[in-house]
Image (cartoon, rainbow, N blue to C red; front, side):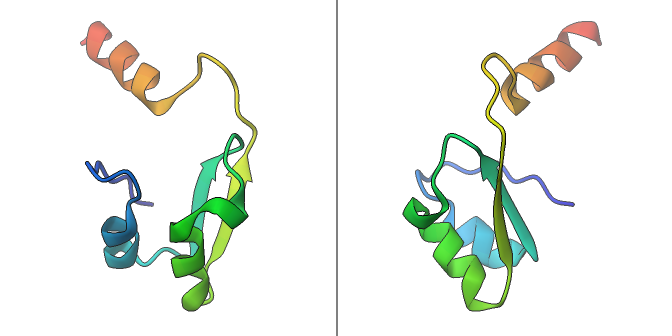
Length: 69
């Protein structure tokens, strides 16, 4: 497992360096629109989307954790 913080709009460098076997995005994205999905497919990786839920995000989870510490 790997979580990466990046400043770019499209995380091509991070994806290339991480070289994931499975790349996951939220369901609000279309795989065919993701440049990084095309990159992952070049080494046989799999790209999947997960159901998008409003008010549920990694950012909100981190804020919740930090507020309890």
